[in-house]
Structure formats: C-alpha cells, structure tokens
Image (tube, rainbow, N blue to C red; front, top):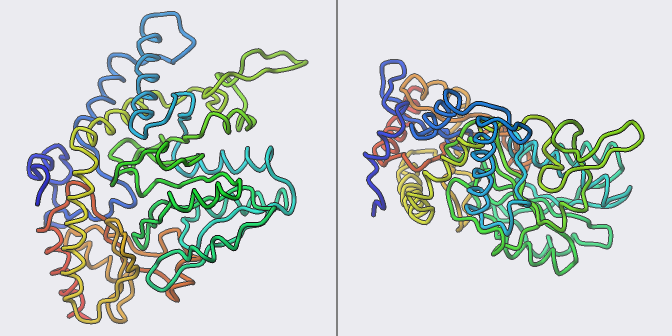
Length: 406
C-alpha cells in the first residue's frame, strides 16, 4: 500500500523529470547520493541571497540571523535522532569525516598500543581505513566480526571477540552492499555488558528508517546529509556528552577555542570544541530542511513504502535467468546488489546507463566484503522514497535486454 502520493512527491525533485540519452531517467543510485527536493535547494538559495554572514562571532544583524538558523538546524538534527542535547550534535563534512574525527580523538585519548577495535566484514572503507591509520600510528588492532553466506553477522562469534583490550565497537547500521539491517541494539547491549562503547555508521539507515539514538543507547552515531536528501559536504557526529567531554579537539583554529595565548590555549564547550573554523552554515540549513521534508512524510511511512518496493524488486529480479543477488538477510533495506551470469558488472552498468537507468557498479568501497563473497564487484540498485514500481520494471526490462545481448 502506498503510504503517500508518490506522483506528488516526484514533482518536488525536478531532476527526476529529465532524460538521459533520450530515455526517461531512472535513478537507482540512492545509496551513493540522493536527489534533492526543491525545498532544500530553495532554502540554500534563500540563505545565500538574504542571510549570508559568518556565524557566532558577529554582532551585526545578518550574522545573528545566520547564527540562529545554524543553531536551529542543530536542534532539528537533535530532534530527528532524539539526542538528549544539542551539545551532542557535532557538524562535520559527512560520515567519513565523523569517523575519522572519532578514530583520531578516541585512539589518542582512550587507547594505547595493543588495544582493539571491533568492526565487521561488511564495513564501508570509511569505517576500516581510519582505524588502520590509527593502527599504523598507535599500534592498535582491528578485530573483525564474520558473517554467514546470507549476509548476517555471526553474533556468537562477535561475543567471543571481546577481551580486556577491546575499547570500541564500530559497526554499520545497514550494509551499503547487502542491504543487511544489523541488529545494532542487541550488539550495543552486548558491547555495554563488556563495558565497551559503540559507534554506529548510520549513512545507509538515516534516510530509510526512524533512528532514536537514546533507544538504541549507542554512544556515537554518524551520518551524511547528502544521503538523506540534503546537500553534500555536511554531516553529523552524535556522541553522548559524557564521551565527547573526554575526547580532545580534532582540529585547531577559530571557533573551537575559549582563549588563545602563546603560553596556553583553552578550548570551547561542546559541541564547538570539535568545529574548528567557519562551519558550513548554509549546508546545515539545507540539511535541516531535508530532515523536515522526510519528517513531514513520516520515517515510518518511508520505511514501509521502501520495504514494499524492495520486496517487489527482489521478486521481479529473480525472474531473470542467471540472476545472482548478494545478501539474503531477513532484515534488509532498499539495496540490491547482483550479477547476471558472466556479464561483468561494469558492462551491465554501462549498458543500463544507455537506457537511462542509473545504477552503481564496482566494489562499493567494500573490498573486504567482496573478498568474502568471492567476487570483484556487483551491480547495485538502491532505492529512495521517490522510486516507483514502474522504475523497477524498467530496470528488469533493461537487465533482460542486456542479458540477451550477451
């Protein structure tokens, strides 16, 4: 059952009405980035044209107005994920910077050589490489949660990875390749039973389902604006205040200080301690407008609609001969990665593009997962709140056409 008027929604996204190579655009690359509704673009334009001034330090009217918008955006984020305080909402450039910030500051202040961070087999490179950099610099160690052939993390093996050296668990809420929705609430409870805090990478969950950080009891949660219908270059690090207080600044400069002298510098209060330099105050307005947009539709309604669409797509795709879908977890999001026969994923993606169908091909920044699956890459179709069953049908027809060419 459609939970909202999909045709009305699509009119909010002008790009969905364009053509590619003379064909109607079928945009199925939402896992990489989502398209932006008019409301977000207009909010950004309006602020540039009418309220553009640097925030926090100005006494003049425009600066104060821009500051109010910026801090109102922080409150919008707080409310959206149900954080306890705006002190727990740090603005960053995106998920990747949020994880790098945490990896650098947490390892500097809370870890020493030989200590361990637990990650999973299905992590995006942005939740692997920052920890590897810390391993090279500080001698920490990565422990990896294995998974079964269906794409479920093995929770008994996860439990066995904990030791007195375990200092942090860092896991994806939803796999960007398999679509697996990991049981993060249960995994957080397990970690807390061992006295270990948890970081959840919410890049692939925040656009698709309700997220309540207090209900999850996660210590850190990160996501990017551009994946939730907002602008690029802005993201969020949520952290429990008790943890953010313990961590040192990530970068130095303006805004993150209280007092500077050549003898000693003292740092600003939360969350500004982690926000060196001029923030993307225009981007935070766009992010807030995007969160308002999806909130007005209802995250439960979006989740229900996308679940129905994904189930429809899985059924249709399995009608195609020689179709292989990777990831069969019972709890899954709107991401489908597949190969057809011996057709190279790049060839499939290139030829679908000539039919106006935008999908992602390659290893999806998850090469260790590809190694576990025994493949080099896949074709990935990922859905958003504006996709339709007609677009799924176009994808299926396109794949079948390409298959017959080979």
